[in-house]
Length: 525
Ligand code: J2J
Image (cartoon, rainbow, N blue to C red):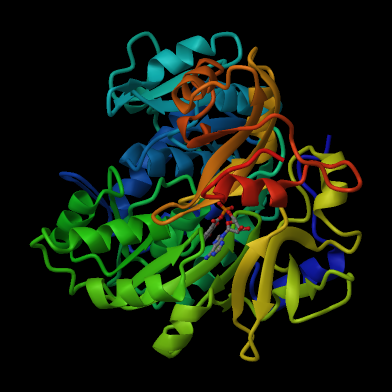
């Protein structure tokens, strides 16, 4: 089993010599700036010293529960103190959090637990009426230990996991610190192993490029287990400079506006859909946003018009971010002129990010598919040798599946993608995964899932189905939910047709499907 594909020795040496990889474990990040304010969650305020102590006690308590170095723990906590405390306790133990998203359900969580042989699963009690303990109960037998933040019922309460700190075995900074989930092109999500060395560099370098310092206040508005709010620069980047992290329970405009004014937030990160909703809410939100020094927008394409609209309606400096949990991050820079910020998705974070753009003929070009490798881009997914052979080139470049154009300044413009993913307001939906599930629906004879353009979400999911009695979107949502799939993966539209169009070599012609599904007067092929 290959949990982790290391960088070649010569490159690892170079990344160390350049000072990117400093040989520090992530768990030490909060040992500095003891008297400064580290974390704000509702009424709860924690200094770095308080956070550090709580993390030490939690690590000792977890160790007593049997969690040890190299163990994996599925973490599905919201933006809470428990998220930060548990993450750091695991980092210190050399155990590895696997960050699930709050929307994931038994299909995704069950897979993560099985595939990684996780020793524990951490959940909140209830959020917005959904009871995560129920979800944990449905996974009985697949999950060994359940930790609950809040009312634990029959499970272990995270608050009770505490013991006198003891000396812990040293953690290897070159080893895996955590796993992120890939946006996913395959039937099951792939796990992305990030090392202490590479992820700390990711967070630190991002903090520098985004102008964070000890006076910065970062609002974690997106789900904390996603790469963007976690380390770009996010929570970890803010801790790296001694700033304050404010946790938002949701990215809703009213919560964000209230927190930005109340906590004098300086930096935050959202997807375009959320940014546009914030701009729309400006009309009825009385709060002031003048503390905001930078609004980071990324995860899905922001058009130049939308960027200009955000700039004028929110009045905050804007940064475009084109990132991926696999590594490479592109940021527009703080001193880039506004018109450049509006019309591109940034340029690579590191001088040692290698970006290769290949045209349709496979030759280097200024426009084409983006391949990348570098000091914080993975060399392979967790335990996926077959998939790795196609997802990475023999010389270690990650095949992003994104189509980009490089401007003379080195900035990239995202122009599309070759991978079969629907980017639904920043949520990535794998066409293959949804197709696999829909194919088992009794009424569906054949199916292809495609992206349709949508004003607010950027893209919506459309299921093109061949069926005698095509099911409605509601029925399909119910069906997929009954199979334990996260709700955001349910198709927004169903497009019935009598047969799927094929390309000359017999593959489903998704481009043709898109024309048919967007035709105002649809005709069957
Ligand atoms: C178009 N497509 C974009 C953008 C990502 C910061 C920001 C985003 C992510 C992220 C992240 C895009 N315009 N500005 O991890 O740290 C699409 C691309 C990319 C995929 C990665 C971060 N920004 N994308 O979105 O792993 O298709 O990471 O390959 O979720 O999102 O998705 P994900």
